[in-house]
Image (cartoon, rainbow, N blue to C red; front, side, top):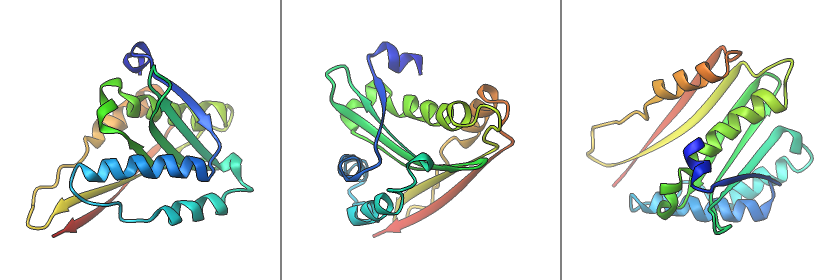
Length: 173
């Protein structure tokens, strides 16, 4: 997190609206392009989420990471309610990975739901949705170092009792 700050990354909370959805989806297409695939859901699905939560902005967190040149290089959105927080969507442009925007957004996500929103009744359950896509015939599944995430989160935020990973695997031809 400090490394991304030293590199000039700035994290900003933004409204969860269609403008955010457009930026997020453009970055998501770049993420999938790395594996020569396309996102498995459409921009309209993100618009549906925006519409569903337009009157519940306190349950949605949308953030953008900006490079030193003020260009948006990564986005994340999540939902939270009660003692639960859901890490739903994150995307970034590959060419800006050297700024470590995803790490800074991840930390800001945890800090938001655990400290800023609920200082007395802290979040006890984080749910991470991980979508893994593999080429057909590929039998190696690389789990995203989930134990590193678990150790990091529990070390920094002692109130968290459970962390759940929902891993969905897609296979393409």
